[in-house]
Each structure stands twice: as structure tokens, then as C-alpha cells.
Length: 529
Ligand code: FRU
Image 1 (cartoon, rainbow, N blue to C red):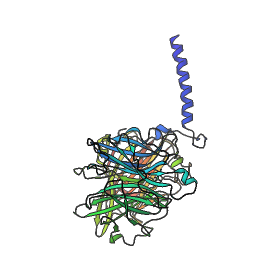
Image 2: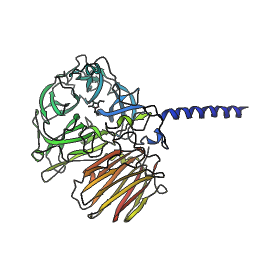
Image 3: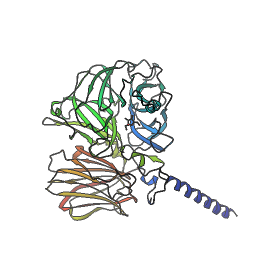
Image 4: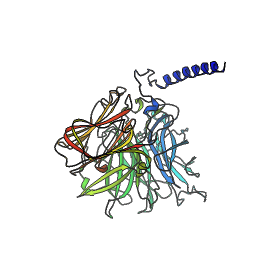
């Protein structure tokens, strides 16, 4: 009797499971995709941040306090496509393992909570402090959907909220908005920086296709100091999500200010992308460095040349003893973000990265690498040296190591004028290709056969390319792979490409192809979930 009951009960459970799985596989247009050998759970990255449920875009309000990294994010908790924006919240001790927290900011009668930043006001310049803990001040854009609908131009304003419990809960300031809209439709994404040199707060804001610089003593009263960007750099779309940081040039005592500026569309490979500008700041005006003075639409100052690293900014309040500039971006592109084939959750963040500024001759360059903390997550390692590649050559297979969640690093010495191709393949037909052509000094990623691609015409329809910026005779490659994403750090992070893809089966093999070359110091690290 008992066995029969268990049998019947498990039948019932299986049927329920079948129904719920089917539901999970439904596309937003109501159709069930034809093939999903992989499901939502299989696509979900193991060591990149994803929201537990539903929609996410830009990282917001990142700050560090008392040993904890905080990440807020554009979030629509009730749906898997973009909707009324909230600030989701997650915390981490190392920027790799994240724990999702209750929602930090919800829309109200003034509008949706668009992107912005947060700082720990250690000196209580804002006066919001209670004398016990340093207040955390978040600054964000109110987006009033009614105003937008009615065709007004001033529906985006800037507001603040403060937290007296280390970012767990926020109280919106009664005097909001703190910056009114002067009549600019795209007027958003305030990012605050502490400017120690001029003893003030500086805030950069995207306005149409320019950056506005504001200054403040108390985080409540803001004064417009200057504007930047007219006819400088790429202007294929609206500028969004700026960041402004002072950086030391590697190996020198020289300091420069860097403006990180996302734009959409107009990215290097189409759609969303993030460019940067190096210069000086006198407390009011940002002046582009002379080496960049004739910067037009086509330039090489992109934080990432791939299609899927957008709206990224840096963490505030990183202690001086640490001194790193830590960055994270949204791993998607507005061309197709709403349609990628995951259902219960949508979008992941990039791996946290360390940014450095280098100078070669007169040229400044931003380099990025995965944060060192990622190393701690290695659970298994595979190494091989002096691998001869001729024609198509198998480098590592699933019998040897699991490449679907891994960091693959290797080196090619004495580059020759030839092509170097690499492939990640599954047991099925999925192939993600990347490589380098030393004749044209160009890298590429080809997603065209990488799995599910037909959910949007802009996905996988074009091979993405990136210039090689290094002149070194050896090529170093580091690929961070996590089920549905590849982040390629070439030449120690001088050229970076990040892209997402949706293989129908788990990635299993790593192979190389070319006329004749050798792979050295191959190291594959499996990263734990
Ligand atoms: C960038 C962006 C921001 C805006 C937010 C809205 O991806 O468009 O400019 O604040 O997303 O979710």
C-alpha cells in the first residue's frame, strides 16, 4: 500500500515537474522554443552574478564597507523583460560569490529608479549620519513614465536616498529631486566620486550624448561645473552610465583622470559599448589629454571590444591599502537583451575586473584583468606544454577536464603572419570560435554556430573583431568561460572581448587550428560553482 502511494505520488510530482519545466521554456512571445537540450538552469553561470529571478540590467551603486562588497542592479522583480525599475541588491566578501538581498529601492510616485551610484559618506558631509555608522548615500535617476508618455522633455531627474544600516535599507530624501531636469530627454545615471585633491564630491551625469560634471560639498546641493564630449569620441547613440576615476599610471607617480562612458547604440561591434577618455581635472573641467586630442568616431579606447559588457562602473570606497580600481559590467547588449533564451532569470554581470592605466610613449591605455580573487575558486587544474598545432588539433577534452566553467590560459611565442583559430565545442553542433589574425592584427569572436542564435537578428549574425593593441611578439590569452559567456583577456588585458552565447549542449572540447604553431603553458582551471 505504502509503495503504491509512493509510486502514485512520484507520478504526480513528475507530471507537475513536466508542466513547470514546459512553462519555464516558454519564450516571451508565448511560443515554446523548438530545442532546448539546455535549460535555464544549464545556461545559468556558476560564478557570475545573476538575479535569482527575472530581469536585470546595469550594475548600480557599488561600494565597499566593513569587508563587504555591495552590488545593486537595475531589476524588474515581476517580469523577465525590462519593466518598472527597482534597485536589486547583492553582497559578497570577494566579488565572486554573491548573496542576493531584499530589494533596496522601489519605484514611487516620482518614477522608476534608474541607474546611479552610492558612496559611503565617512565624514558625514551630508548630515544624514546618526553618529554611529557612516551613512551610505545613493544617487539615482527618477524616470517618470507618465512624463515620458505625455511627450515632456524633463521626465528624468536626479535624487538621493540614504542608508544608516550599511546599505540594507534606504530612506528617500524629502528634498528630492536634488537636480531638476533642464529639458534634456536623456539625462541620467549619476556617478559620484570623492575628489580628494579639491576636497569635494564630483558627480558625472550623462546628458544626451555628453557628460555633465557637477560638484557638491554635502551630496545634496549640486552645482553644474562643466560639460564634456561634444565632437569627441563615438556618438552613435545616447551616452549612458558614466564613471570618473583618478588613476595612477602604472610604474610612475603620474596621475590621470579617466572618464568611462557607455553609449548605446554605437558600440565598437554594434549596439551597446563602453569607451573611455584620459585627461586632467582642475576641480571643474575635464580636459582630454593631448595624445587623444583628435579623437573621432573611430578610435581604440574601448574598455571591452566585445558586444556584451555594458554600463560597467567601478566600486566606491575601496580602502587605500587595497588601492585597486574594481569594475563590473552588465553582460548583455540592448540589441537583444530582452530576448535571450533564458526564462526564469535574465542577464548576468561580467566577472569583477581590476582596471589599470598604462602609458607607452605618449599613449595611455586602460587594461583590465579578472580580479585575483577568482583564483581562489579553482577546484581542478589541467596543464600541458609545447602543444603542436597543425590543421585542426584537439587540445583538451571533457575526459581530461570540464571546460564549461573554466579559465583557459596559454601563450603563443613568436607570432608569425598567419591566422590562429580556437574552438569550444559541445557534443552537439555548437561551436564558439575565437582567434587572432597576425596579418591584420585583429582578434575575433564568432558566435554564428554557437547554439541558439535565432532569437534576435542581431545575435550571432556578424563576427565581432577587435584590434590588437599590444606590439609584443608573444600572444597571451586568458579565456573565462561560464556556461553562456566568454571573456577574453588578450595580452594581459590590453584587448578585452566579452560575449554571451547559448550552446544547446554543454561545452566539452577545446581545439585549435592553424597552419602550424605551438601552444605553450596551457592551463585550464575548473572554477567551482
Ligand atoms: C543603461 C540604461 C541607463 C538607465 C537604465 C534603465 O543600460 O539605459 O541609462 O538608467 O539602463 O534601466
